Length: 240
Length: 173
Image 1: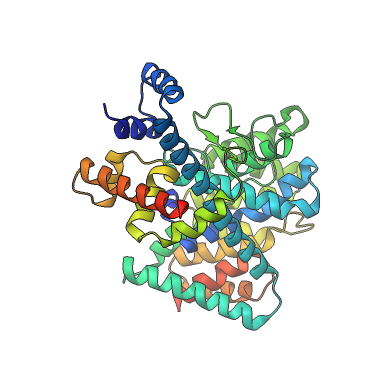
Image 2 (image 1 turned 60 degrees about the horizontal axis):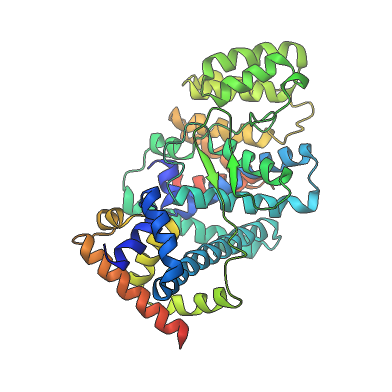
């Protein structure tokens, strides 16, 4: 096998353990091979660092745009975003229907109350709520929804009804989900979910073909200072 | 289009939606763990970059859990790890997926990254594309042939070799 093949296979990770060992030994006795290997290694590391730098700049820019109070700048950013979205949709689909938009935008709200990641101290959590979120994370929305409803009977937390409604959307019970969102009393709204509830309600209306109701909700949302607002503006742009 | 696929292709609207949607949840989660308010934005950006890099490398192609679960796990692991950028992030007990992360900070000569940034831009787009596919995304030559429309493996290999030599020459000049 020539040197180029050997180097390519090393960087592809396709050398056998024995071949890799022999290759690493050869580096010590072949200065040219070592020089080429070092260059490629540095190139790989450098490209990673540059891409991360580029990503970081992009995310900082998005954060800065969110913080910006200059309405003109905001408008420009939104316009640019809408232009990109319009272009993407023009290319990929000229017939965007409500169903497509719903499929594109709907994503179950993440578990921000008790994320089920390793090391969570289960013993400190209420078992019904914990179980509901576990089922939710596993995508077992029907069972999760029932448990959230049960949980609300004793904890009276807004978020349990919010997640119950998301479960109804996931199982396709959209009318029930809308009613559920509307029935949330929003006593504390400690997790800033109220505006997200409006966002999901708008999506449910959209899926049901009640576009006018969806637009009214999105229009209200677009005037708020909330992460859902930029999504509402985007979706409105696509509906209009 | 599948969400992971859209993120992999760099769809700006989907990437931004994913970034905005998980932001508040991530902040709330890190606050509960005790992270300071002023560190949250930076931590979220770093976690999102780790997520994006792993998606581009195809490590989440078979994703079973939600993206937010992975994002929160990265945040949590990074927060509790003494190194800000861990090299291997366990996600959950049942998942086969492990996100890896090499900070690369110790492996480069001084000034190399800055020089590479200048010189890489001067390469033709085709060269940039193939070098990035092989050395950043981690595609094998066979995958480059099928994904990037090369005639066969030999053609892709020669093209990559020419681009490497050109870049090396530029970096030395």
